[in-house]
Image (spheres, helix red, strand yellow):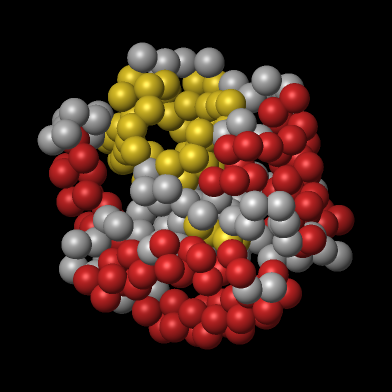
Length: 244
Ligand SMILES: [Mn+2]
């Protein structure tokens, strides 16, 4: 059994380099993947309308449709940029949607999947914001706001959050946060944990747990493969003409 893990592509426009690289990569992998695990923030902004998707995301959704047709099971965890994934992913792509992450069994191993945004217990402000964004009044408000308006607001918010993140990211001790998180998850009976969010790829195995942090698909093009129970963190090299 072969499982592919990806996170944090933060896709915006199909003409962007990382978007094209992802389509190219998925096209090459098509037919060779039993389970595709998308670990959050694949989209820079996604909120699930019942009958509408953002035009920019049609190419990637078509690719995921081809995965479904090829018999790949898709598992998707929501991130801090993409939420209410349910309607499209569940209904159209037959995906297993895990809004807050959760445990799955892969090759007989209990594996915990998490975007990683909940890994830091100190981050109380974010937890409050997260629960507001996912609350039913907000969900209702989003449902009734025109998609063009929502997309415009999100594009603005994402430019601001990028500036904040650039300032903040050097200060966040991602490895330490994730190690503590992995120990907590391990005490719940999971030996392996796969996460994204921090945009720092690393893979470590201790006596207690195996931790795979995926990095991102913005400029690192890192991803993981689990084949017959063995995890490997890899990097994709986009074909050269994508850079031009
Ligand atoms: Mn994230």
